[in-house]
View 1 (tube, rainbow, N blue to C red):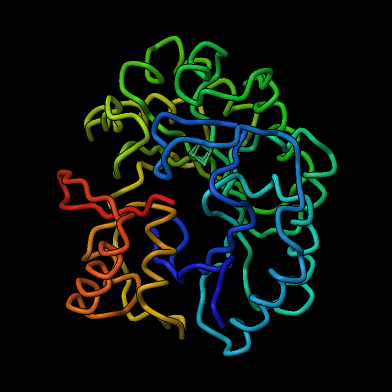
View 2 (view 1 turned 135 degrees about the vertical axis):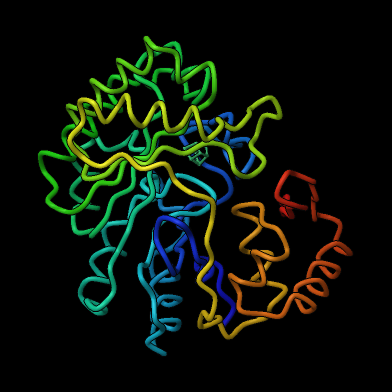
Length: 315
Ligand code: SF4
């Protein structure tokens, strides 16, 4: 079966081996973050939609999970904000009813969590990984570039409400953009917001792959550790600096065409050839061949960074 909504399994630093489910077409999101790995948001929106028939997504899941693959998580993520999909609750319910052996994770910017209906639809997930990068509207607008009318105060209230209603794990990601989100004033307000949200874990992240805006730089390790110490002075939950990607290898590869799988992965985030080899379980020579084929289609983008050449796919 050719998968349109599933990708991977991919191995990530936060979720181990995870099968991705993409519920939203490229790229619908209420934010347009300067560091986004998936490039600029083409559809800034907060309105929820049934972008695809839910039956189509459930059919793919049933087909893939029929072989009982070994997974750490099934994860809602992809090339947009998953909670924009108006029938996400039915997908959650289907997995929980038919595949209770799998843990379910949601990667979200949390913007829609102040909406009761959205909150109810995702409450059965085992792990929610929201993001929060700013606590003031000014910095929120500079870094997350929200749709007009979207307020960071609402994002924070939505996350506080999530904590009150949700008994699963919350791992909050804070992305540091040097000299913008890590000024003393912003960090103090951010820390106060996190104290109210009470996540189980805070993960400090910074640029690792090419972002949407070229001027965005990575925070260095020394600065991240300073921020970690500052936050940890008041926050009880562990604060973790997310280390560089460590791949686990040996994955059960999807039984579909390698070129298509590679395209699906780099559509969502830029990767080096070595990462693609480890993620897909394919030999590096096969990856090189697949990348050459994709290059012939004219939509492969390459970019040289500190960690090597990153490949991405531009639709
Ligand atoms: S990083 Fe996430 S929230 Fe920000 S624009 Fe990209 S998909 Fe949207």
